[in-house]
Each structure stands twice: as structure tokens, then as C-alpha cells.
Amino acid sequence: SNDIPFGGHDNILQILSHLQEQEKVQLTPLILGKMPNSYTFSKKCAEVMIQNHYNHLPIAIFRPPIVVSAYQEPIPGWVDNFNGLSGMCVALIQGHVYRGYGDPSYRCHTVPVDYCVSALLTVAAEAAAERAEVPEQRKVPVINFATDANTMLWGEFGREAAAGCETVLGRFFGRYALGVTTSRFVHRLFVWWFILQAAFADLMLVLVGKKRKHLCMVNRIMALEEAACHFSQHSWSAENANMRAIWANLSAEDRKVLPFDIDSLDWKDYFRHFLPGIKAALERCLQRRKSKCA
Figure 1 (cartoon, helix red, strand yellow):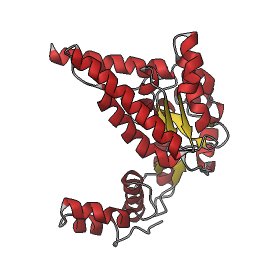
Figure 2: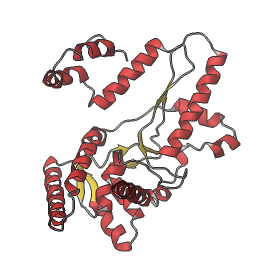
Figure 3: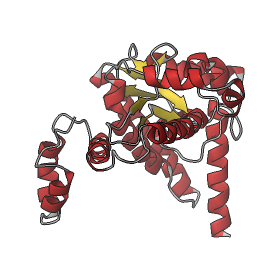
């Protein structure tokens, strides 16, 4: 809905351009309103702008859930960054125990990046075809790429992710190493325990003449959790009838080339490659750093 405060995003940018940094910080809660963070607010501004100024173009608004590593393409488990859930699992790979803040009984809406790209390409083609048939101005369609039928719970995420651990012992303990809790006290205890582990590990590195890195990792994971905590503390039900209709209209050949049916995705098979994919991305990252230092 077009209910952005201060007269819209253009006015907000104009106002902020005349403010000092501290004034911007103080004004932020008023600008965000009911939106949980600037990330979701910026997406809302973009959608309103598209609906108001670009509804004559052959476009659609595509809303994916939390995007995670690939299921099949280019290879199972592929990921090239540590944002979102991939970054939070770095702690599990490095042997840390952690509990995020959230409700384990709520749905964790995720989708593999290759499914997301396939769906996005299909939606773009559908929007272009629709515009050719109905060229007059119309409301830009909103496509929710999500499902309520085939999702896991936040409480199941750590257990499923641990399926990718290399050893039986790792798979057993990994089931309990990563998860969420509704208790702020328990969460705070884990945060401090996490920080202590990282500080001790960094101290050992300093003693042997190496650079500290673990506290930096902790800060990154804390930032990722802060961005995701709103989604682990709330549960949604997404209307996706138009996305289902697009999938139903695809030919059998197109479905093979551009698979994105989340309802039929085998999550147990997916998580066999989840942690190995993140570990491979970590190794590539370390290799790039070594190459730069060489």
C-alpha cells in the first residue's frame, strides 16, 4: 500500500539530505513506522515507486522469501556469499554452539537461489507476454514466490543443516549446535559464550603471531542475526495462486530447464549439500585472500 510517511520516498531523501548523521539516526524510527528495518522499508519504497510510475511497462513485482544456496545449479550447495542463513551457519562449520532469538515453532520460508532465478526468469517472460496482450495501463502484478505447503520450522533448521556434516559425530552434535530460542536470557547467554569462544581463539592466534579473525566473524554473524530476527520471531502465510498458475502453464520441457516448484522440493536431499557448499565457499574465500597476500 502507498502509505509511506513524510509524503513518500522522494521527500524522505530530500529531508535526509539536509540532516546530520545523528539527526538521521533519531528520525529513522519515525520513517520506518511499522516496518522492522531499513531493508524491508527500502523494498516497500521500491514497490510503491514501480506501481506509481512504471505500471505501463511489461514488469511484475517478484517477492522471494529468504534465498539460500543452490539445490542443483550450477552445482548442489553452491553459494558465493555469507549473507543470511549461510553466514549464520559458518559458526556451525567452525565448531561453535549458538542459539539465535526466535520461535522454533514458526515457519522458516526459504528457497534455493537456482529455483529463485528460474522463477524470476519465468515471471519476467510471463509479464512481457501479458503486456503484449493487454497493452493499456494496469496494476503491476505482485508474485509471492513462497509456499506454506513445503516449509520447515525454525526449530528444524539446525537439525536439517547438520545432515551435511562430514562425520557421524559431527552430524549428531550438529543437530543441537545451531537453533533458536524464545528466551532472551538464554539467547544472551549464548551470545556471551559465543563471544568468549571467539576472544579465546583470537588470543591463541595473537600468541602465535597471526591476525585475529574470530571476533570479526562473531560481529558479522550478530549483524546477520539482527537482520533476520524479525523473520524468526513472526510467522506468515503467503498467497501464491499466481505463482502456482505460472508453474501449471509451463510445458514439461520448460519445467526441466527452469525448475522452481518449491512444493515438490526434497529438503532432506537439499541439506545434504548445504553445509558442504558453505564450507567450499569459505575455502574459496580463504584461497583468494592468500592469493592477494602472495
